[in-house]
Length: 262
Image 1 (tube, rainbow, N blue to C red):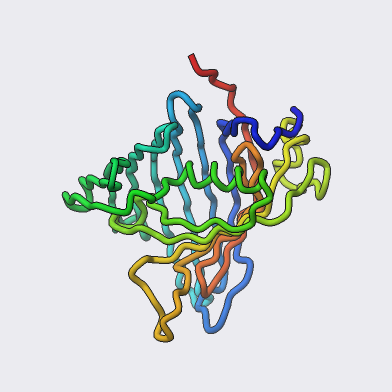
Image 2: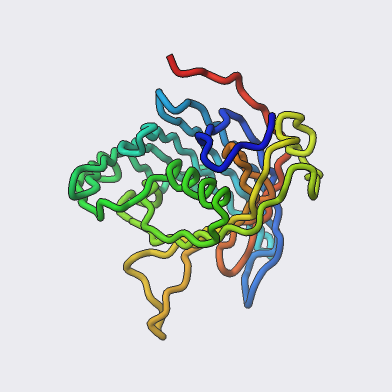
């Protein structure tokens, strides 16, 4: 597989990835002593049928004083290939107790992004028409990497938390890592189909639109860093929750058969 030209269509790879989670480091007076967990990321679809994602993140957080809490986030989403429709459903468990459940749909209309929530309670929301859904966010980051752009900034709606938040995002794309350069020491490095695919270091900061610090400056709710391949596969995850940072190593990667458009 040759590296794609800048103006070639962006083709996202259907794949199933597993990331093992460990604590990278803490900041300040963080009570976190250790983190163990796993992310399952199962992405499917194509440019005709749209894109589905089954996602699960299980994390055990140890405070070092004998208290271990287990969080279990499960979500399924679907996004239209035209980036105009987005459906989402998630459940969030803490120590096996369900604490949040979200179910809804978002649609881009002429002058508004309309969200119809069914859970946690029925609600109709209206957001900026410039809101971007998650798969489109990834596509834009790849396009920016190809074009040598380093900064993207726009609001994103992903149905997370209780489904009623839009996040302002700042996406920073680093210099391209050419095929054959810095060969990964994880499952990506063992996949022959990635050997000739370029990738970029990417950091995405998420800011709640209604949240500012006492100084008036916005601080991110959280940030994600990773290396993004031209086909949408990610490796070398870093999940920054402000007082602690979790590392995600890609330990398993399965590329699914390509489903051509009819």
